Length: 320
Image (cartoon, rainbow, N blue to C red):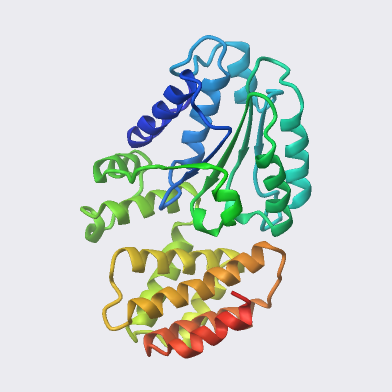
């Protein structure tokens, strides 16, 4: 048996396995999720089952193939992710992965390549992957995982069949958090979306940064924080973690429709500006922490005043 996955995600895995059993599973699949919760676990369950030597419904966990998958030594299975100390997936990683997928399967007929956080591939990496997607080799599956699939080039998305993990029920998130010993704030106990965000923050070890930055963003948009206070809040954490947290906070603000006096169009432009900065950082840009934090906070302040012209100017500067 493989590790448990959320029940809401088990159905999607089952649907993909059903397609495989009918020889209808495409060679490239993009799996997305609004929050990112459970993406990797669902992918691992799917891959382990596809490679299992004994079962087609769920990996047995006992055969030699399952043992190799668990140990990360299966010759027909490759998992690509951001290398330690890096902010993006580079072209060399994708070229190596493409070479892997081009070779004949060594243990069976199925080869699987997983690219986690596919949206953080550099432009060169995306172009290298595109060539592989255009000319798939043999019985191979390329599985892309992405919380923000819209950041992937359209040329990549168009060559993949897209599936979306369903959101977690409030009871599922509550049970997970309680079993993990995480205190659930009283104001979100009946909010499925907020509970899922807390599950994500806990699973990534970023509860504090996500909470602090989200609070800062909401306070800035409601005129309850100064530029100095907000900048200090961002500077408490690693820069890329702070920028990621701002992007997430803005996404949640948009999804939960909490914009009140700030127009939806302004929030969308603000999100584009900060997301563009994040993408540049993942592509290798190394901006100064202090000035970057101040600029982000200044953008949020402009959004509070619905100064969309200034935000659009920032988008032009960022090349978005």
